[in-house]
Image 1 (tube, rainbow, N blue to C red):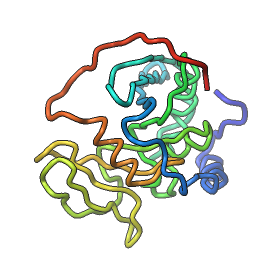
Image 2: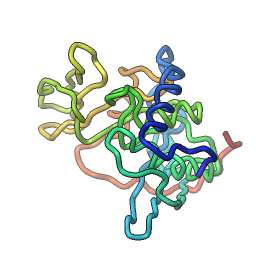
Image 3: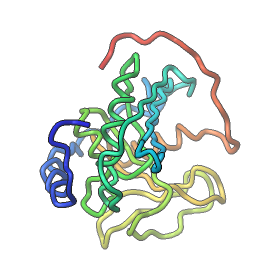
Image 4: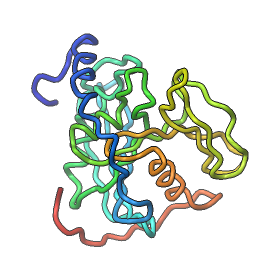
Length: 218
């Protein structure tokens, strides 16, 4: 756990307020299908007070696995809606640091700007690492949206009042949408395009593992 990691809700919200102004929103981000893209996610063992994080790097053009890493650490913050990043980021960063190559764009299972304080996990991780990040979530949190068109690629604005904080996006025809938002150093249009590029088929697929060597580290 990093030194001086917040221990209370008040401290965590103060950190969000401080870091939120560092989110970069005027960069488009890497083009879909180019370079590398890395997915990160976590799992919890509440009985043992542990969180496990995984990072998997794909070649963005072929979607073949280039590298992968995991990390396990203590849960670093209590469960508080809107502050989940403080439970996950230390271990997610450890998994990213264990990769043998730069991760490129990072896709988080969570939110970026589509967050009550406009600073979800994807934004927080992006600011701390300097990496371009996007959030792709399974539900719209507290925000509203119209029903997207039913075919793959259909989208609708995810709204906080009149403010667009993300998009509801169908990655497959006639299935429930996912909710895409900017994290850091990407545009919303680019985040949507990356999400579609990472879900090219209508059937689930497991890309073959390719242990190619990576040049350099971030």
